Length: 292
Length: 250
Image (cartoon, rainbow over all chains, first blue to last red; front, side, top):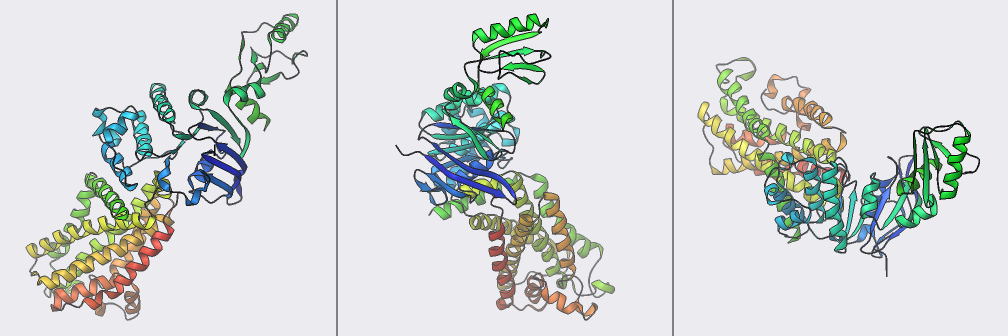
């Protein structure tokens, strides 16, 4: 099956600064790709390149067609730090946004899809909470039923409860078959929503795969962490490192963990906290971006 | 069909946003009233006044209207562009089917409608508090056309300023820096005969002069000359095209 989105060797510069450097990736139709990376990694530029807002070098294809020339109705976008007209109500904003695409959905039904009730429908945007405002923005992005949804940090600035509620709604939108590309700094969000993860740093793709495969390939099965860090690195764990005042041993099986703890005892080091946990995307991200 | 609906949607949004900003609504309509009251009632323009304001009261009507034509569109469109850029709304414009020219036309039309309402209120006020009579229907039509073309032209210039400056504060400063000299270099309140001879070419270069002159021909001499609107119509088209080209993409 043809991917919904394909990028081949995509690069973009702002003046002399490289924002994207030879990015290649593809997103299957109906799947969710999460793009993570430090601030300034190129996440927003990647979204803009896919949306056809900027003209990068390389190839950006949406369903096999060049992004610059596709029917704009196929794309819905929620830009980072986006604010619509603040004195309008969600009903008016959704009607306005959909009318630009010649679409005339029932605003109440669209709001319901993102968890907004009838009581919020006719309140001015500026009187809604941060979480409700962001949901209105997502509702605007999906009002014309796009096949591809680009969400640039959709839950930034929202409290944990509002964030979880929005994840529920995004999960439902994804399950309905909409292809989504989401940028995020939240690994809980990525864990919850993403079928695939792309780690971007300094404009280049460091790794891209399913979350499980990334964790397995990069961070291994388990991670041992000892706080505070001992004076030296354990000789039986060559990959061990000091991070933020702690000793961290990636891809650490039970036998290695036991021998590290015996070694600590022999060194007369008494840890305040020891954890041996399954590796996560956070470990993958930390390992890759710190190495880069 | 699609273009019309997009324009209507954008214009409705712009109008609703304006009407719900009470401070903006108040000052948009109060500002010209203040000008009329200062010049028409407090300063008491006319042959008896002497000095700079010795022309008949009807002479200054074009000046009062020039204030509305110049300040409201310049600051409104300029700050609208800055606000849209700061709120990342131009990204939606770049991704969606509404073109930047359509966006500009919708916002310019709304601004022009607002300016026409303010101008109508101003004329009513002038007729009520000064010894100026209402011109005939043809004269009123030409005045409305001059005000409309001027509002569109200066609205487009405002959009240009908003696109080229980096902040809302910058827009306000740039708009004031352009508007204040223009207001006094465009045959608005001070008769050209009272100014040094070298001012004449400067006045001829100001687009506002070509809003003021046809209006004054109606209010002072009772002459309706549609051809006198040609220069401001040309300025309007050039300014709209230029503004549509430089509107931010992001």
